[in-house]
Picture 1 (tube, rainbow, N blue to C red):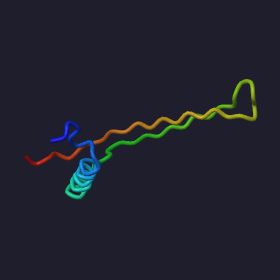
Picture 2 (cartoon, rainbow, N blue to C red; picture 1 turned 180 degrees about the horizontal axis):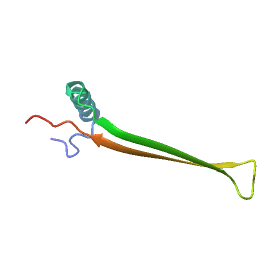
Picture 3 (cartoon, rainbow, N blue to C red; picture 1 turned 60 degrees about the vertical axis):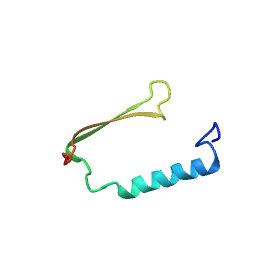
Length: 70
């Protein structure tokens, strides 16, 4: 057995196949539900350069994740 098991091309290819297999089997219908969202945007002119505006955007969210069946 080689000392660098998994570091060869076939090791890399096996990992890629595993990633794709897991992605295909993952249930994407269990998306979290957003129960609250508040988006605020503040915009002010720059003190030294009046033609430039400073903008701050804040997003507050409350998310409920669905319960998983065991």
